[in-house]
Image (tube, rainbow over all chains, first blue to last red; front, side, top):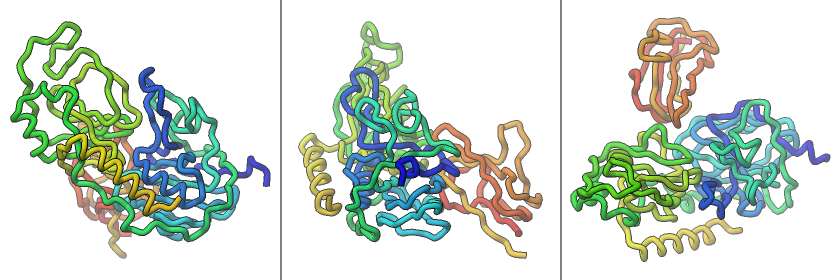
Amino acid sequence: MPEAARSFKVVKPGLATTVQDLGRPGYYHLGLPISGAMDRLALIAANRLVGNEDGAAALEAVFLGPELTFAADALVAVTGADLPPKVDGVEQPGWTAFTVAAGQTLSFGFLKGGARAYVAIAGGIDVPEVLGSRSTYALGALGGFEGRALKAGDVVPLGTANGTGREGASIPPAARRPVANEIRVLPGLYWHRITESAQDGFFEDTWKVAPEADRIGYRFRGGRKLDFVPREQPFGAGSDPSNIVDSCYPYGSIQVPGGTEPIVLHRDAVSGGGYFMIGAVISADMDLIGQLQPHQAVRFAAVTMEDALKARHDETARLKATVPA
Amino acid sequence: MTVKTIQAPLPGTFYRASGPDEPVFKSEGDAVAIGDTIGLIEVMKSFTPVIAEEAGTLVAFHVENEDAVMAGQALYDLDA
């Protein structure tokens, strides 16, 4: 079969369906975010189910699934959010490899839980690498399929499958992380800028995901406004007490403009600016943020660096144990 | 005559009109044709129209204007 025939055509694009792999690290200091899957574990799981390398490019569909017609037979797996896949209207199990035959259409039912589904296809999505990654950074019109979310009519090329994936391969429900109601945070960075009662309040209050939360940042609302320790603003900092002299923004850092609505910077984040940060979400929980729906309630829990490193270690070990490569 | 409950296709904030001073897309009792816009759902700074996939009469809304909706939540009843 000619390579050009290994593709799918986008009938309906979904809301903001993008090509993502494990990201584009190494350029954040130049202002280019790491991009890549918001839920990396789900991407890796989907890739392993169809026999791909962990970092193969797949689709990330948020809230609303796309509709895709395949030009050639393909082994497909959908992980992450509970967004039921259908082949020619027949529902398929999630977290399980299934076949879509040439001419058949992959579509999705309504979202039942989580926020982002990963659609891995054996052979991966064969868009050109940009700076070492196929991930889409839509704000910068870089990578992925023409630097943007998919549109109706797009014909998306697929790589050649290595043949190791098998239909029916599945990851048991116990191995999947449930949707979180608690996100672990390492306080730090500009933590000293808020009062002790504000520090306590941040972790006591319940926060709800704002509808504008996206790949750049996850905004939360509903907790008490943070009070700042009074100071004369230093030269170069803005006049609001939440302003600092411009600084680097780490991936996962939590900025609170005006002290009102925390924003967790995610994979397409800006790399620096003038808002103070109260700390950072631990790396093991960044995947969980990517699965939060708007209006969902969460609390933040303070942990130590030791806890954070252990959580990262445990997550990696769990991935190895439950999702065989 | 059967009444069907139509669900929200995605989570977000539900709007019954295209703007605060605009007329509502549909009122209870209105006829609905396939392709009609019933409302809008705002999420991630974009507005996605809720398009009717079935024709009939709109019997009742389950949500108010500007209500937060989850995907799969009941939006309106249609007498098809």
